[in-house]
Length: 216
Image 1 (cartoon, rainbow, N blue to C red):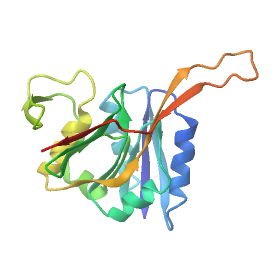
Image 2 (tube, one colour; image 1 turned 180 degrees about the vertical axis):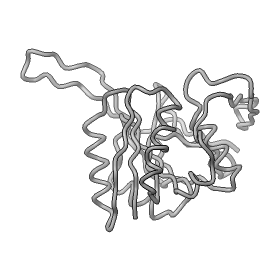
Image 3 (spheres, rainbow, N blue to C red; image 1 turned 120 degrees about the vertical axis):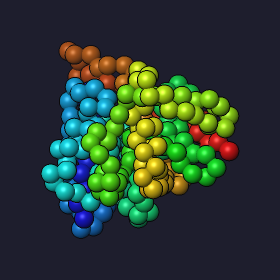
Image 4 (cartoon, rainbow, N blue to C red; image 1 turned 90 degrees about the vertical axis):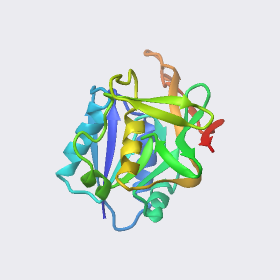
């Protein structure tokens, strides 16, 4: 089995992320893996470039991991075990610690790319670019998560994962998640100072979701 680890970076990655990814890779037997990085590319160019570069290696799975994620033990093992088309591990984002898996009536509509495994069949069934931000999903009813797609208004930030999830489902594939598992989200709360032996950054790890995106 061949897996690519796809990491879009702003130019810096967390060492704990790399450590947790390697630990997960080593927990899966008979696995051949390869890392792909991008540097300084915007959304969605970074994500599309990663897929384009990884295509030449012909992997069985594409594992997207964001630069500031802390991957739980056995996450990859469990994602592979679910044998899904797209399998995600949920994680908290922002001050509200909102989850990145959006679920309605038991079905996942879309998910973030912080820790997401995509079967190669999904990538091959879709066309380049796989990720887009040139149109917007506009929520018309937040309580019921009803929305329309505005073809004329691009996303100012993000949205590539939402549009990807919508197309995945339109192609007949299904998004699933590892149950009862949450990845950690890291951020630097104070940069280390030069000129001191103890010059490490202070890292905050948030691994609890306060607000789940679950709708009826």
